[in-house]
Image 1 (cartoon, helix red, strand yellow):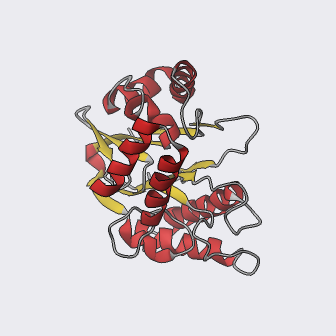
Image 2 (cartoon, helix red, strand yellow; image 1 turned 60 degrees about the horizontal axis):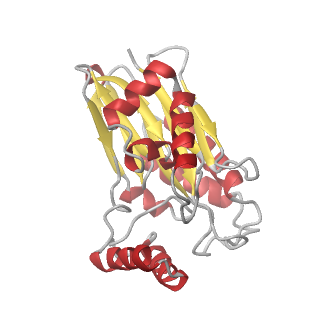
Length: 271
Protein backbone atom coordinates (compact mmCIF):
# COMPACT_ATOMS: atom_id res chain seq x y z
CA UNK A 1 0.00 0.00 0.00
CA UNK A 2 1.06 3.57 -0.65
CA UNK A 3 -0.48 7.03 -0.36
CA UNK A 4 1.09 10.26 -1.59
CA UNK A 5 -0.16 13.86 -1.62
CA UNK A 6 -0.52 15.60 -4.95
CA UNK A 7 1.61 18.49 -3.69
CA UNK A 8 4.16 18.72 -0.86
CA UNK A 9 2.54 22.05 0.04
CA UNK A 10 -0.82 20.46 0.89
CA UNK A 11 -1.81 17.81 3.40
CA UNK A 12 -2.86 14.47 1.94
CA UNK A 13 -6.67 14.26 1.84
CA UNK A 14 -6.67 10.53 1.02
CA UNK A 15 -6.82 7.85 3.72
CA UNK A 16 -6.06 4.14 3.69
CA UNK A 17 -5.95 1.38 6.27
CA UNK A 18 -6.22 -2.38 6.55
CA UNK A 19 -6.67 -4.87 9.36
CA UNK A 20 -5.98 -8.59 9.33
CA UNK A 21 -6.99 -10.38 12.54
CA UNK A 22 -4.54 -12.89 13.94
CA UNK A 23 -7.02 -15.74 13.53
CA UNK A 24 -10.10 -16.56 11.52
CA UNK A 25 -8.83 -15.89 8.00
CA UNK A 26 -10.55 -12.52 7.76
CA UNK A 27 -9.66 -8.90 7.20
CA UNK A 28 -10.85 -5.50 6.04
CA UNK A 29 -9.55 -2.56 4.03
CA UNK A 30 -10.64 1.05 3.67
CA UNK A 31 -9.66 3.75 1.15
CA UNK A 32 -11.14 7.26 1.28
CA UNK A 33 -10.56 10.20 -1.02
CA UNK A 34 -11.40 13.51 0.64
CA UNK A 35 -13.20 16.11 -1.45
CA UNK A 36 -11.20 19.34 -1.62
CA UNK A 37 -13.45 22.36 -0.93
CA UNK A 38 -12.89 25.89 -2.16
CA UNK A 39 -10.36 27.54 0.16
CA UNK A 40 -11.99 28.20 3.52
CA UNK A 41 -15.46 27.21 2.30
CA UNK A 42 -16.46 24.06 4.16
CA UNK A 43 -17.87 25.36 7.45
CA UNK A 44 -15.45 23.15 9.39
CA UNK A 45 -12.54 24.26 11.57
CA UNK A 46 -10.85 20.86 11.35
CA UNK A 47 -10.46 20.26 7.62
CA UNK A 48 -10.61 17.33 5.25
CA UNK A 49 -7.51 15.38 6.46
CA UNK A 50 -8.97 15.33 9.99
CA UNK A 51 -12.32 14.21 8.61
CA UNK A 52 -11.00 11.30 6.52
CA UNK A 53 -8.82 10.08 9.39
CA UNK A 54 -11.82 10.06 11.73
CA UNK A 55 -14.20 8.50 9.24
CA UNK A 56 -11.69 5.97 7.95
CA UNK A 57 -10.65 4.86 11.41
CA UNK A 58 -14.24 4.40 12.53
CA UNK A 59 -15.15 2.55 9.34
CA UNK A 60 -12.22 0.14 9.63
CA UNK A 61 -13.02 -0.59 13.27
CA UNK A 62 -16.71 -1.22 12.62
CA UNK A 63 -16.10 -3.28 9.48
CA UNK A 64 -13.58 -5.46 11.25
CA UNK A 65 -15.40 -6.00 14.54
CA UNK A 66 -19.12 -5.78 13.77
CA UNK A 67 -19.78 -8.75 11.52
CA UNK A 68 -23.44 -8.48 12.48
CA UNK A 69 -23.64 -5.17 10.57
CA UNK A 70 -23.61 -4.80 6.79
CA UNK A 71 -20.93 -2.59 5.28
CA UNK A 72 -23.61 0.02 4.54
CA UNK A 73 -24.61 -0.03 8.20
CA UNK A 74 -20.95 0.28 9.19
CA UNK A 75 -20.57 3.31 6.92
CA UNK A 76 -23.70 4.94 8.32
CA UNK A 77 -22.51 4.41 11.89
CA UNK A 78 -19.03 5.74 11.05
CA UNK A 79 -20.58 8.87 9.51
CA UNK A 80 -22.62 9.46 12.67
CA UNK A 81 -19.60 8.92 14.92
CA UNK A 82 -17.53 11.36 12.88
CA UNK A 83 -20.31 13.96 12.75
CA UNK A 84 -20.76 13.73 16.52
CA UNK A 85 -17.08 14.54 16.96
CA UNK A 86 -17.51 18.03 15.48
CA UNK A 87 -21.18 18.92 15.23
CA UNK A 88 -20.85 21.28 18.23
CA UNK A 89 -18.06 23.29 16.62
CA UNK A 90 -18.72 23.10 12.87
CA UNK A 91 -21.53 23.72 10.37
CA UNK A 92 -22.40 20.22 9.21
CA UNK A 93 -25.21 21.59 7.05
CA UNK A 94 -22.74 23.52 4.90
CA UNK A 95 -22.94 22.10 1.33
CA UNK A 96 -19.17 21.58 1.32
CA UNK A 97 -18.84 20.20 4.82
CA UNK A 98 -15.90 17.73 4.74
CA UNK A 99 -16.75 14.63 2.74
CA UNK A 100 -15.10 11.74 0.97
CA UNK A 101 -15.46 8.96 -1.54
CA UNK A 102 -15.41 5.49 0.02
CA UNK A 103 -14.10 2.02 -0.77
CA UNK A 104 -14.38 -0.66 1.90
CA UNK A 105 -14.06 -4.43 1.65
CA UNK A 106 -13.96 -7.20 4.21
CA UNK A 107 -13.59 -10.94 4.01
CA UNK A 108 -13.72 -14.10 6.07
CA UNK A 109 -13.47 -17.76 5.21
CA UNK A 110 -16.89 -17.71 3.48
CA UNK A 111 -17.54 -14.32 1.81
CA UNK A 112 -15.88 -11.19 0.42
CA UNK A 113 -18.07 -8.10 0.80
CA UNK A 114 -17.59 -4.70 -0.82
CA UNK A 115 -18.95 -1.14 -0.77
CA UNK A 116 -18.06 1.65 -3.19
CA UNK A 117 -19.32 5.24 -3.02
CA UNK A 118 -18.37 7.77 -5.71
CA UNK A 119 -15.29 7.63 -7.93
CA UNK A 120 -12.65 5.69 -6.05
CA UNK A 121 -12.25 2.17 -7.45
CA UNK A 122 -12.16 -1.41 -6.22
CA UNK A 123 -10.76 -4.11 -8.49
CA UNK A 124 -11.57 -7.75 -7.77
CA UNK A 125 -9.42 -10.50 -9.26
CA UNK A 126 -11.10 -13.89 -9.46
CA UNK A 127 -9.41 -17.26 -9.15
CA UNK A 128 -9.20 -17.58 -12.95
CA UNK A 129 -7.21 -14.33 -13.22
CA UNK A 130 -10.02 -12.13 -14.55
CA UNK A 131 -10.16 -8.58 -13.12
CA UNK A 132 -13.55 -7.03 -12.43
CA UNK A 133 -13.86 -3.28 -11.67
CA UNK A 134 -16.43 -2.60 -8.93
CA UNK A 135 -17.34 1.03 -9.53
CA UNK A 136 -19.90 3.69 -8.73
CA UNK A 137 -20.29 5.37 -12.13
CA UNK A 138 -22.79 8.08 -11.20
CA UNK A 139 -20.29 10.93 -11.18
CA UNK A 140 -19.09 9.92 -14.66
CA UNK A 141 -22.65 9.57 -15.98
CA UNK A 142 -23.88 13.13 -15.56
CA UNK A 143 -27.17 14.30 -17.11
CA UNK A 144 -27.02 15.48 -20.73
CA UNK A 145 -27.55 19.11 -19.72
CA UNK A 146 -24.52 19.02 -17.43
CA UNK A 147 -22.38 17.25 -20.03
CA UNK A 148 -23.30 20.02 -22.47
CA UNK A 149 -22.02 22.62 -20.00
CA UNK A 150 -18.81 20.63 -19.60
CA UNK A 151 -18.28 20.43 -23.35
CA UNK A 152 -18.94 24.16 -23.73
CA UNK A 153 -16.42 24.98 -21.01
CA UNK A 154 -13.80 22.83 -22.73
CA UNK A 155 -14.53 24.42 -26.10
CA UNK A 156 -14.50 28.07 -25.04
CA UNK A 157 -12.06 28.00 -22.16
CA UNK A 158 -14.06 30.80 -20.58
CA UNK A 159 -14.01 30.98 -16.80
CA UNK A 160 -17.72 31.85 -16.77
CA UNK A 161 -18.54 28.65 -18.66
CA UNK A 162 -16.36 26.59 -16.35
CA UNK A 163 -18.04 28.17 -13.31
CA UNK A 164 -21.48 27.30 -14.72
CA UNK A 165 -20.39 23.69 -15.20
CA UNK A 166 -18.90 23.45 -11.69
CA UNK A 167 -22.08 24.89 -10.17
CA UNK A 168 -24.21 22.36 -12.08
CA UNK A 169 -22.09 19.46 -10.85
CA UNK A 170 -22.19 20.73 -7.27
CA UNK A 171 -25.99 20.89 -7.43
CA UNK A 172 -25.97 17.14 -8.07
CA UNK A 173 -23.74 16.27 -5.09
CA UNK A 174 -25.82 14.30 -2.58
CA UNK A 175 -28.98 15.49 -4.35
CA UNK A 176 -32.09 14.22 -2.51
CA UNK A 177 -33.99 13.21 -5.65
CA UNK A 178 -31.63 10.39 -6.63
CA UNK A 179 -30.45 12.01 -9.87
CA UNK A 180 -26.99 12.99 -8.66
CA UNK A 181 -23.94 11.36 -7.13
CA UNK A 182 -23.03 10.73 -3.52
CA UNK A 183 -20.16 11.20 -1.09
CA UNK A 184 -19.94 10.44 2.63
CA UNK A 185 -20.33 13.66 4.64
CA UNK A 186 -22.54 14.16 7.71
CA UNK A 187 -25.74 12.35 6.63
CA UNK A 188 -25.68 8.61 7.43
CA UNK A 189 -28.48 8.05 4.91
CA UNK A 190 -25.93 8.27 2.10
CA UNK A 191 -24.82 4.74 2.95
CA UNK A 192 -28.01 3.42 1.33
CA UNK A 193 -26.83 4.92 -1.98
CA UNK A 194 -23.55 2.99 -2.09
CA UNK A 195 -22.77 0.21 -4.55
CA UNK A 196 -22.57 -3.01 -2.52
CA UNK A 197 -22.23 -6.73 -3.12
CA UNK A 198 -20.46 -9.91 -2.11
CA UNK A 199 -18.67 -12.89 -3.60
CA UNK A 200 -17.80 -16.34 -2.41
CA UNK A 201 -14.38 -16.29 -0.76
CA UNK A 202 -13.23 -19.13 -3.00
CA UNK A 203 -13.87 -16.95 -6.08
CA UNK A 204 -11.61 -14.06 -5.02
CA UNK A 205 -7.84 -14.06 -5.39
CA UNK A 206 -7.03 -10.37 -4.76
CA UNK A 207 -8.52 -6.92 -4.16
CA UNK A 208 -7.06 -3.57 -5.19
CA UNK A 209 -8.51 -0.30 -3.88
CA UNK A 210 -7.42 3.04 -5.32
CA UNK A 211 -8.37 6.70 -5.20
CA UNK A 212 -9.02 8.50 -8.48
CA UNK A 213 -5.61 10.14 -8.26
CA UNK A 214 -4.11 6.68 -8.88
CA UNK A 215 -6.73 5.40 -11.34
CA UNK A 216 -5.77 8.28 -13.66
CA UNK A 217 -3.34 5.69 -15.08
CA UNK A 218 -6.36 3.98 -16.65
CA UNK A 219 -9.16 6.52 -16.71
CA UNK A 220 -7.32 9.72 -17.68
CA UNK A 221 -4.07 8.78 -19.40
CA UNK A 222 -5.23 5.42 -20.82
CA UNK A 223 -1.89 3.73 -20.17
CA UNK A 224 -3.56 0.36 -19.63
CA UNK A 225 -6.81 -1.29 -18.66
CA UNK A 226 -7.90 -2.35 -15.18
CA UNK A 227 -6.21 -5.73 -15.49
CA UNK A 228 -3.02 -3.99 -16.54
CA UNK A 229 -3.20 -1.67 -13.56
CA UNK A 230 -3.47 -4.56 -11.11
CA UNK A 231 -0.69 -6.45 -12.90
CA UNK A 232 1.59 -3.41 -12.67
CA UNK A 233 1.02 -3.06 -8.93
CA UNK A 234 1.59 -6.77 -8.36
CA UNK A 235 4.80 -6.82 -10.39
CA UNK A 236 6.39 -3.48 -9.49
CA UNK A 237 4.55 -2.34 -6.36
CA UNK A 238 1.99 0.31 -5.51
CA UNK A 239 4.55 3.14 -5.58
CA UNK A 240 5.44 2.30 -9.18
CA UNK A 241 1.85 2.99 -10.22
CA UNK A 242 1.88 6.38 -8.50
CA UNK A 243 5.22 7.23 -10.10
CA UNK A 244 3.85 6.38 -13.56
CA UNK A 245 0.87 8.65 -12.91
CA UNK A 246 3.14 11.48 -11.75
CA UNK A 247 5.21 11.17 -14.93
CA UNK A 248 2.09 11.27 -17.09
CA UNK A 249 0.76 14.27 -15.18
CA UNK A 250 4.02 16.17 -15.64
CA UNK A 251 4.17 15.39 -19.36
CA UNK A 252 0.54 16.30 -20.06
CA UNK A 253 -0.80 19.73 -20.93
CA UNK A 254 -1.67 21.95 -17.94
CA UNK A 255 -4.97 20.86 -16.42
CA UNK A 256 -7.76 22.94 -14.98
CA UNK A 257 -8.17 21.88 -11.39
CA UNK A 258 -5.47 19.60 -10.00
CA UNK A 259 -2.46 18.89 -12.17
CA UNK A 260 -1.34 16.40 -9.50
CA UNK A 261 -3.89 14.71 -7.24
CA UNK A 262 -3.49 12.76 -4.02
CA UNK A 263 -2.95 9.12 -4.99
CA UNK A 264 -3.59 6.00 -2.92
CA UNK A 265 -3.21 2.31 -3.81
CA UNK A 266 -3.81 -0.73 -1.62
CA UNK A 267 -3.40 -4.30 -2.91
CA UNK A 268 -4.65 -7.21 -0.78
CA UNK A 269 -3.67 -10.71 -1.91
CA UNK A 270 -6.17 -13.11 -0.34
CA UNK A 271 -4.54 -16.35 -1.48
